[in-house]
Amino acid sequence: MSKFLKSCLQVCVGLGLLCAQTASWSADKQLRFGTLAPKNSLYHRQLMEIGEAWRTAQGGASKFVVYPDGSQGGETEMARRMRIGQLQGALLSVVGLREIEPSIAALQSMPLLFKSWEEVDYVREKMRPAMEKKFLDKGFVVLAWGDAGWVRFFSKEPAFKPDDYQKMKFFAWGGEADQQEIMKSMGYTPVPLETSDILPSVQTGMINVVPSTPYFALASQIYTMSPNMLEINWAPIVGALVVTKKSWDEMTPETQVAVRAASDKAGVQIRIKARQEVEEAVEAMKKRGLVVNKPNAEQMRAWNDLADKLYPRIRGTLVPADTFDEVFRHLKAYRTGKGK
Image 1 (cartoon, rainbow, N blue to C red):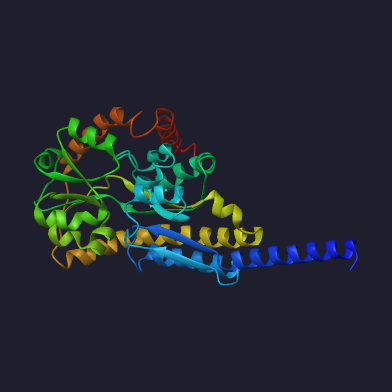
Image 2: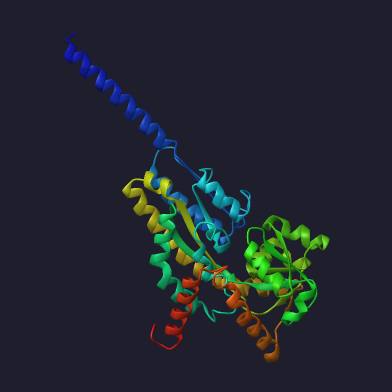
């Protein structure tokens, strides 16, 4: 065999092996996503649909795995796992998202600021392009935006005004040290825990107030141990589905298009259904013994006064000052009709 033919054969064999290795890598590709959402919940089902779109477009023996129920740890832990490659994506609330980009806290950490879902939607859409660019700069692609209802206070004993809660012990996210310091400075007692610790901690008396959405309180059975719910919309739980840029860049353009389409659809479904499930969850819990406590006008003024005192403490700590100011500008424009 001539040297030329031998060289050609070696090149062809090498290319063949490379192609075979690439095909095998592609076929065996796996995406692992984490979430605190319960198995078979709306959020879990939507994640599975996105995964099916990715798996179909990816082809081969590719596998999409969702770890629900916080089985990969709390949201702070899931953000860490994405950074080291143990997870490729996660459906997170602001608690986890702010571990990636702190300015996202503006959508969730400002109590009693938003009066309706229309206001939440308006501000989020105004901030969305710049926010997604910030996440991209940190190595993450935002695939979909969602929410999970309004935070209400579930407690063992009835409570109506801010002072009533100062003698109680609050569940607080373990990774939110700044929020805990603010609570302490206002006379409240936060107890930092992970989500999986909530129910046993209520049972033992370690905590007796749980800020939670009605849907999560129903799904986790929190209301059975804390059967009093204060009917105020303290803050919206806002979230997003994110995937690491590394995993995104490894997808073909066709796969990216399929995943984008499925994610856009899932985001809409999550927002619509989650908002419906707030009242449905409350009604379901009421039938099982939940007591709904509605503050009167004077008590509501006390809550609004508390929020006004909190804003200066939140600005520059929980929420970067420039982002804090931006939210207020957008809300002012919306409420005066300029942004409608």
